[in-house]
Length: 206
Ligand SMILES: [Zn+2]
Image (tube, rainbow, N blue to C red):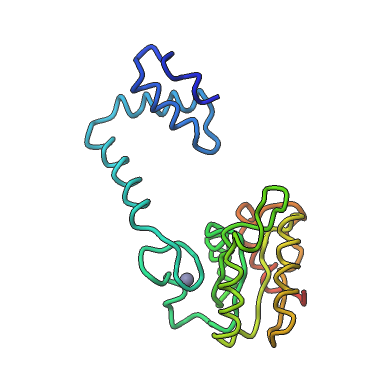
């Protein structure tokens, strides 16, 4: 679909490529991509290059935290390096953006483990594609006392949580899950702050 703009843009192939790139962004359709391209064409060169540079910077500077796989510019993320956080409580989320959602609730003082996805046999995503091995190692080595499952309340999110809890069954760790204030099938990222805070406070045995 994206290729239909190529060659065909009245301003030529360079603009066609820019429109095509924008149209690949989430939530950006053909019209919005066209509008963004016109904005870039109309703004100063300094402004446009600052945007290009900041995209390059995040791609070069940001990487997964070596402990929890949250995104960071350093070796350890801010949460893992903070002395204020309880390292014995680990909240499991699917994506780094879920950490941001959870943090906005202000109701959690433990640390995280980012799976970098969820189990999805139909898409060929198995345990080896996620950071599950690292999690098990962490539970063993860091004397983790509680695992809080905060995968999304979807079929795949629940399946992932179940898989992990089975895997950890032999370890002396308490496994809890967020209270079901979050509507089933919804996504953590879009839950509001109060809902997440309630879900964290009301967490229950898995
Ligand atoms: Zn971290």
